[in-house]
Length: 559
Ligand code: GLN
Image (cartoon, rainbow, N blue to C red; front, side, top):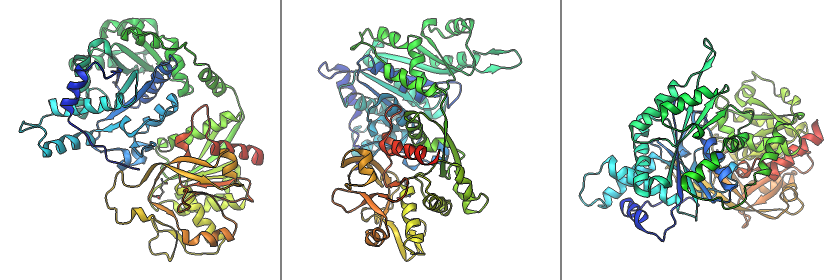
């Protein structure tokens, strides 16, 4: 499913977009960040998208990341967080997950663009002779390529509004070219068709007991130095922002006080759209663009969601047995999917993070898992921690603790079953135990001989057929499903009959029955694992059926 995107001639395309009247041009919102990283720019973009969608607009969101990687597929999840996979097989930044969850839309690989893809396309064009003997420079060739990829995404569907998040903060060396391309936009399409939003942070100084606006002022000055006057400031702070600070910020940043939107640290990120709405950001945006709302504003279901989140509910302890535990963002979509299922069942999620390596090295007894209501083994790569995860899976199976396995979590559950139920003592995966003679998990045929990393795994949405009578079939309520994948290894069909004879149910396969997509153990309260990643398709107010079924089982059986 993965395909390489062929970038075309950006100058010609941008020119066409600037002059043609028959191509619909969406309004563009550019979101930049200042002061600090990690302020929640992705959540701010997603929230803006959420409230604009409620006004009846078709909204797209795209992120530009200044990293020289081609995509997020080759980034270390332990440092950068989850690699979010789109239906079309894009390996993208985790912010795409926020965008999809807040918009309730499926986005494409074009919504996540990293600098490596831009430079590669420019260099490829140069080799093809498309620049006709000219010197190739950051301005205009690279900035044109950035804008061409922006318009490609913005005009891929009939969008009314296209939100663009620029990764990093203003002043980062690697971000300059992106900010410059965004500056040029207002010349290309008119100032009234571009809205610049800058996200800043106000630190709190204990000694004087006040929030300080100087770093935010400086950040806006940096932005203005490169020619961008923000129209809106979204102001993050851990403390309340007094009116006088808003007035001061307005004075020094040339942004009107009504366009300064406070964004305090919230109990739940899902509150952010409601806060933006409260401060009238939606009205401000429409006024800037000179457009009317398309539908009567109704965010009732979102308000209901936030109300549910804030209600005091019994806690549900779920163990996530993983290995990237210093960086919890690695499991972003998983934790959001678990939360959603918990809220739907009147519970609050309490995650018990379990380091698989500690179990493996016997620093932590697997019996600590007795106190949890359910166990999840998520996706992962490489050998580290796999034996600890297998021990945890065995514990879940033997102690009737509900178990949900995702991707690697299915592969390891297969190995555990093969070893301890089917008595195949050296059952292993070819990925981390190449010498074993019993690879119950082996390299996929289509993956043999691939040595390039990045965009080469089995990626994106693939159809799966569920077996009648299986738990999975019952939970999904249908036979044919589509879920997102990201893996190189698979269940080895050679062992299918042996494992089935011992009680493992192959509950989902590709429609041609060639690849195993789901397994379950029927005489267990809940033991289901999938080769795909259902977490990418969960929504905060519409839990994914597998997660919902898992949480229901934990409540029924354990608490
Ligand atoms: N490492 C395994 C594979 O490549 C599982 C991947 C995953 O969990 N996403 O098949």
